[in-house]
Image (tube, rainbow, N blue to C red; front, side):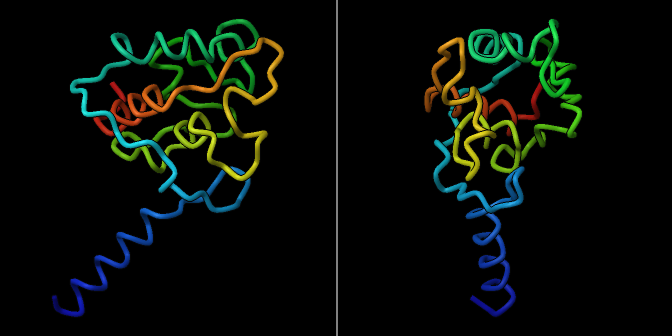
Length: 140
């Protein structure tokens, strides 16, 4: 490999190891579950059921926290009062994935929250993997 190729590989590797967390810290994305191999993955067929079960209680039509609506594709794409929560094609850089994988340094950013009143459990690795595939496939 020449110097340019080695540089490019090192830049790609560095970008794949850590991304900026919502709290300003770095997130080790190597802790993310792998992307699901399912294709195609769509909001209506695959993602909505996960969000309905784990997220809609706080991010639905009735008083959505942070003005984030996850009960429709349009709401997810729009994001919250703090900005977009996903980057189509880049699941490892998406705030939504970092939050549901619960790998951020601030537990307040974990979704669902660890000690939520409704007792909603964290998403499974398979659910996070499916959300990653959906985002990587364009979040449609």
